[in-house]
Length: 122
Image (tube, rainbow, N blue to C red):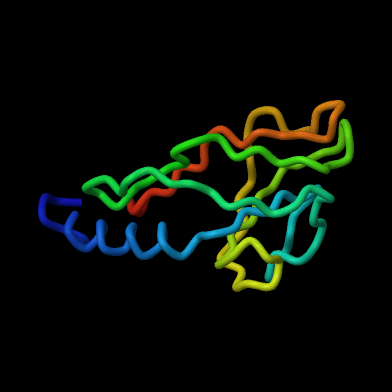
């Protein structure tokens, strides 16, 4: 794209702040959650993320790792879904495949170190 094409950083920051404020719950899944995010939920409870400040281009990430507990020891967790709250009754916002260590440890714990959200389109 040529300079000046697409949305401005100002609008991307507005979008990023709205998205950051909306995502209040994260849920791990043992396989693809499917449309609606209800399938393959892990035994680990939902967690509330703490986010960084939105950057000029609308991006943000976890401000601190998110610790999930109660999963099946050694069990898979290749997906996370995003929600409007951490009650399990909120609005589903989407599913995201994970990379890195995708299994619960021997105590049924898994730490999500990063979850970058960008305002860029490709």
